[in-house]
Image 1: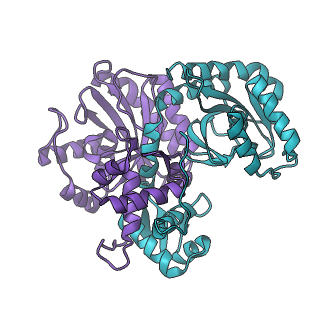
Image 2: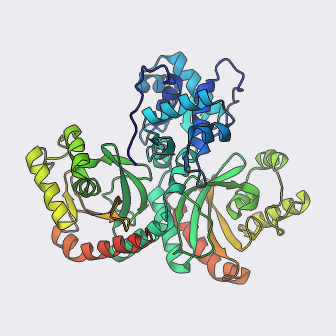
Image 3: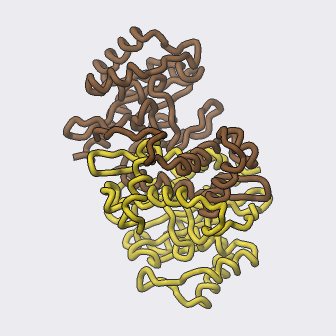
Length: 260
Length: 260
């Protein structure tokens, strides 16, 4: 979908208190799941009076729970994304095939789409509890440049969109392995496009190695990507390519048959 | 968490435009995934000027996509619930064990918690595509009274909370099978509590039969419930109880070992 121009935050049409309330919701995360008013005000950079009104309104609407001075998100916040998820066609099918890959490989398998300069996890089949794992939920966002799904999506963008992405991309190191040279990065995308898969080896987090494939509609429109993510100490690049790639390819083909 | 009293929508602290903006997000659903401004205004019962400002603000913030006159939700809406999901402890573990039940039974298996008079789906393992299925995503809300997970949660509530729930509960028929007599309903909850499982047989939708068990922390605090949902034409009540109940019980026990 080609995007229309956005209004700016100083437009008379911009509803600042809607933006403020949403930023209060977003400030809760894994490490800040329960906060006081002061903590919310501090983390959102808001004065206490504003933060208080947003919190009390979100509480009245059922989006946050309040226990004395402590606020935390309620499961109602999931409703805000549920309508997006239910509009993802064949979500159950995607989930089913991801789970089959996890069965076959013992590793986590995910589906993500591009949104701005991040990928967003839409479906995920988690491997059995591993000592090394990054906590990923549906809705988790990761930088497009340092994820295998992000790279294979970038690699397959139309030239004009790719250039727009590359001009905005921040190539900053997450680990000693992270590629930060724009020329090497561009070459990796070319290789990924040619091979039609991308491997990211410990560039986002040490020990994290993953393999991704693009997912298309039958009209060749890119929908998103699927990946297998593994522990680099257990799974070599060779196993990833020789054993896992055919299984993941089969998964992508199965999913694509539903997108007529 | 015991809940503090909520402010009302006519309180001077209530931010009406935050509530309005959120109701715009919520008005998108499976059957209304793409809407014009007029459609949003009509469905939210808002004047066009207000609906327009909320839509343009949500567009500026990246929560809706706009293509000419058409608006639709973007995957960024998932971020609003992602922090809730990442605060659900052991989400990956729950997902893993749900998937194992699907492997063993070939049926969908879910985990839900209570929120108001509805249950909210937090994790789900979907069965392979079936002709009969209701579309359920993470964040989907269903009425507590007519779901097996809702009933087993109700059955296990402390007496005071249960009475509060029952006094608000709307027992209205979804199918000819739906129990609507409050006395029979209360007796079913008593039976469910005694057996420590609940079966709901085609009371929410014809052909839908499901079995649920409660999930506890080790201090006996109720966390939520898990269920297996099946097609009544394929799976009899006998199979549900004799074959599936032990598998689901094993799943609940496995999950509970992580909640020390």
